[in-house]
Length: 241
Image (cartoon, rainbow, N blue to C red; front, side, top):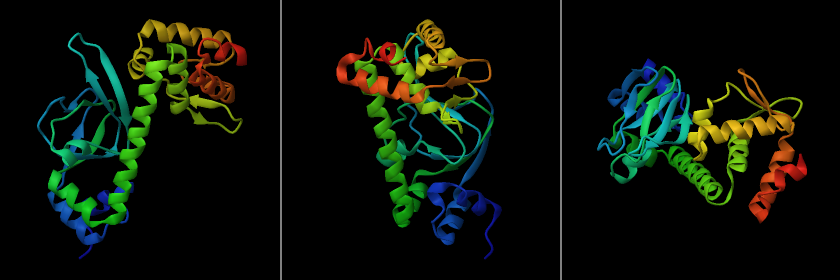
């Protein structure tokens, strides 16, 4: 049997590339495809659903909102990535809210279908384990940063994660996240992020425009972070700037 367009779309996801065609065909028959618009809620916090979502195109944001309206952004996922796997694995309510940032096309897999794929296809199972470990490492890093680093260093750590290398060795974050989004990613106030970006610009550590945030000295920033984690958070960036 020739693969259907749905089979082809599922096979584009890195996690499922080595899954056998028969398993993909079975999953495709039970999958639902959904288009969402910017600002549309895909998953609500504490919801009892347990489907897994694969992102064909677009971007979604994972966040938690406090009772007083404060937002903590846990991450953003784009094409080829997935979300919702935790509830599928442990059967517990959703631990965060997921909202579309840009228009997105999502593949919704029922819990039993997703688990069948990753349990019957060793490559997919290993890929899921690696994904979970990478997210756990990132969570650990952010927890440590929040506990021991001031806003400046938390901002630097996040910009280094977001930056993409250029041929000249500099890093570029483009498009630049709004300051309130950066603040929500690092557990800070927007005013504090604005203040630190301005200071980094004056010190030659960042070039901020509407199109991008350029980090001309990423090695200096990385060294400063290592020193900060070693207990010299108050002086690290100024000494190396």
